[in-house]
Image (cartoon, rainbow over all chains, first blue to last red; front, side, top):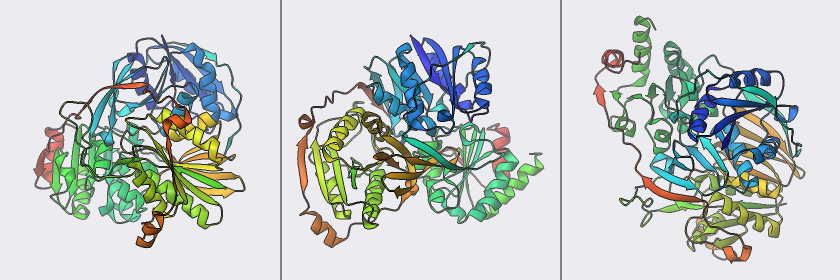
Length: 316
Length: 249
C-alpha cells in the first residue's frame, strides 16, 4: 500500500506538524509519498525539506496560484486527482486540513477518521470524542482511508531521507472561492502546536493589556508560546489563534503554565496531555488544580511578576 | 434567499460524560441533551440574515431519533420558520448525514447552508465540508464573520495563524466558529409560538441513503487519567520544583 501525506507549510518552510503526521503515516506500514501544494517560490523549499524526511520515498510538488491561499476546493480537487495511486491520505489536523480533508473524503465516498491519537493497525485507530473524555477505537471499512492526525500525540519524524521530487499532475481549479485577505499575526514566539513551553491566560487576566503586562513577559522569559482559554478569547483579551481547547488548538508541551484559568472541560481537552502542568489561580477549588502537577494558590498579579523575576535570576 | 440550518441533538456541553463500564460507548441514559452549541450559532446567524432582510426563510433540519424534534423546536422558538425531522436510529456518521442533507438541499434549494463546525459529541468536524463536496459547492469553515453580497458571500474564517477572509460563489456552505455571534435565548411567547410551527416528518428511507456505518466502533475507553499533583506554597518553591523535580527549566 502507498500513503499520501499532505504537507503543512507556510509557503516558505515545512511545518513541524508535517513531521509529526509523517510518524503516523509511516505506522500505516506502506510507502509514504508527500504532497506539497502551494503558491510561489517557497513551495520548492518546502518540498526539498520534505524530501529529506526519514521514511519518505517520493515528494510531489504542485505549485500554482490556486494553492497559494489554502482554499479548500482546488486542493481537494488536486488530492482527488491523485487518489487512484494511493490507499490512504494522511494530513495533520491543522485548520487547513480540517477544512480540506473531509471534502476529499466525501468526494472519494470515504468516512474520514478525524484527529487520530494512535495507529492500532493500518485500518484501526484511536481518536478522542467528547472533548477527550472518551477514547474511541474505530476500524475503517472503507477501501481508501482518509485520516487527520492530532499532532500533539505523535513524535516528529527526523531527517535522513533523500526522496525524489516530482511535479504532481495538475487538477482544474473549480473556481468556487477566492482569497480576499488575511490578518496573520507575525510573532517571534514559538507556535503553540510546536512550542516546548506554553504560558496561557484565562478570564482572570481581565484585559488585553494585562496579557501584555503579565503573560507575555513570563512567556518570553521562558521562550514560550502564548495561549489563552476560550473565555479570554471570547472576552477579547487574546486573539482567536491563541485559543487552547476542544475547539481551539490541542497542545502537549513539556511545560504548560495555566494562569488565571479555571479549567473548564473544554480547555482541559486541549492541554491535559502536557508533560508538566503548572496552575496559578487564586481559587483553590478551581478544577485546573485537579490536573496540575504543581498548583499555586495565589493572586496572579503578584505571583506572575514574581515568577518572571525568579526565572530571570536563574539566568532565563 | 432561503437558508437551511442543520442542527444536532447532543449531550449538553455542561455534562461530564461517563464511559460505560463495558466499553460499548458513553452513558446516555438520563443525561441532559441540548442543541449542539455550534448549531445554535448557525441558527442565530441565519435569523440575523433574515432580520436584516438578506434571507427570506430559515429552515431547520435534524437527523436523529424522535426526540430530535425537541432540538428543532428550540430552533423554531429562537425564530426559525419551519423544521424537517429525518428520523434515524443509532449512529449516523457525518458522511451519511451529508448525503441525507444533500437530498434535503436538492428538495429545498437554499442559497446558503449554515452548519456548526463540529458536534461536541463525536468532534468529527466533517459534515459541512462533506456536504459542500457532494453538492459541488464552495465552502467556508470556521466562520467568525459572514456577509451577503448578492448571491455570493464574504466570510472571515478563524485559521491557525489568525483570520482569513474569502469570497464564496453562492450557493455556499458556511460552518460556524465560536466568535460568529452570541445566540439568543428563546422568549416564553416565542416558545409558545414555536409549538404551532410546522415540522415535516421524514425518515432516512425517504431519501434512499445507505447509512450503514463505515467505521466500526471496537471500543470506547476512559482516557488515561491524570492525577492532581501538589500545591506549592510560593513562587520560590514552584521554581525549585520545576528545576529540580520536574527538570523542565
